[in-house]
Length: 105
Image (tube, rainbow, N blue to C red):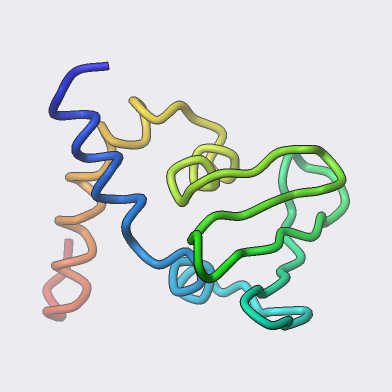
């Protein structure tokens, strides 16, 4: 992995995972001390419960024995690699900026 990609992934992983879920429209199904559960459809199967630990900013899927960071979740959700995800970040950022300013893309 090149240095630029590593820093881009690190920067993305510093973003708040609970906020990212909220932006994506996921609603919590349960809240615990220091953690929030979400029912999320991944792999075109029945929804699975992902638990986000607020302190570590990581998710865990106990049923499928997987977990990780915001980038790991985005890769699962969008069925892509971290390289593919980061290569699509700039068009997304431009589109997002245009949406926020009210300019058509």
